[in-house]
Image: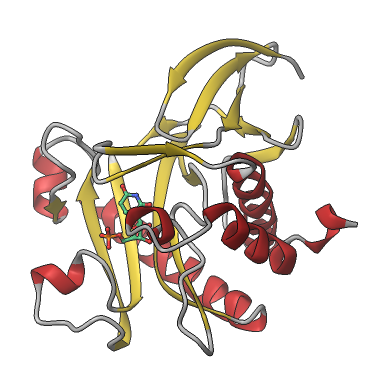
Amino acid sequence: IQKLEPIYSGKAKTIYTTNDSGKYIAEFRDSLTAFNGDKKSEAPKKGYYNAQISRKIFEMLEENGIHTHYKGMASDVDMIVDIVDIIKLEVIVRNIAAGSITKKYPMPAGKVFEKPIVVFDYKSDEYQDPMINEDIAYALGVAAYEEMIYLKETALKINSILVPYFDRNGYLLPDFKLEFGRVNGKIVLADEISCDTCRIWDKVTKESFDKDIFRFDKGDLTKAYETVAKKLVPEIFE
Ligand code: U5P
């Protein structure tokens, strides 16, 4: 498979057309943004570690019966994916209170939820990703009611696979963000699952090994992502 033209450049990945009419290549870059693009930077090897972590998680989810857009790697940082019609939602799963939810509700950081929380944010830079529900999603033409139910069920299933997976590797998974797309009438998991899109805490020290390091200037991001990569994808260090 060959990369042809870049057709879309997001905050951390560039999407290329390929010589396969059903596939794109998503190139993971070293660039970082936070707070709706207000804060920008670069971290060496970030794209590489996130691509490899994401690859591993997609492979593991596929083995557990979750359909994803992942189709293999074309290089260390180039992921081959199905061309999907992205659903303009961020599906966020929360197990432990952290980040924005601690600002919006009386939920102190670190509070462990009795059952996981799923929220839907409408993907819109202009409107700053407002939280929406099934009715607003329908009114916006983003997703049908039954699709919203399917997205929530799938997000919870993914959570039930990821929490023990991170636990086995020594980490807590306070929260993470998923994106989905439609391909041939089917909804599949899309985008990435990486240190940029999850909160990953050391089980013992509760130290962050994720993008919060960049958001709140908490230290060396590349070193933290490398630490996670050494656990999740040890084969790339051999
Ligand atoms: N998140 C993203 N992208 C966004 C917003 C949030 O990946 O545009 C992820 C964060 O990394 C965190 C979770 O794991 O969703 C909840 O973020 P927040 O609502 O606390 O900012």
